[in-house]
Image (cartoon, rainbow, N blue to C red):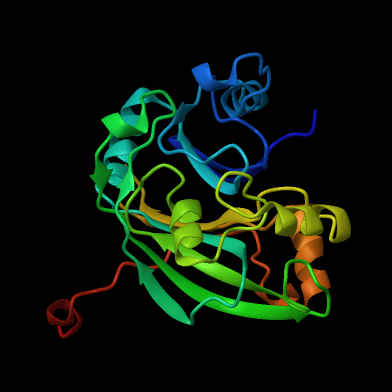
Length: 257
């Protein structure tokens, strides 16, 4: 089995590239599955790991896990209090706006309770159109097909938030079987070699739970999305695996001393 790509590791936490299609942990909604990120990473590192946030099964990208329950509690607090900067790259149908804030309440779906039993919760996602392309093919009812590369920054953490917000605004993520449009999903799968959800967690920044050092993690895309970006002329937007620890800014009053 191919080892998971480790982006960063110290004695307290580890950041990995979660592949698309891999479940993070066992779930009542995925009975019969035998492969999970937690087990693979545990076996690879030879020690137990603790999840502190989630990525949907079809979403790829950077994911942070703690190496102890104490660190997991601290990191979970940071994620829960929205002290983490998350950014995703998504390929969507249509020409997305240059910038927009998607502010649509969403039901906090858990996949178990009926939707009628769940209240709509405030939900916000900032989006930015990074690039767009027009293909000279008729995919739907128009003679040409337009698609955009969008950077999405969720400001809240609802289930499937980015996918649901973009779909509601009219720019569904390609490969999204539930919130997208099958004709475009099929075109990308059959003609462009991209049969997966085209959504990737490309950037994550947070304060280290022990020394408060800011960690900025960038995650490269997988082979499928990388090849697609080259095909669409978006290679210049491909992120690279990187780790940055920017210096803490010195207050002006201390700079003068």
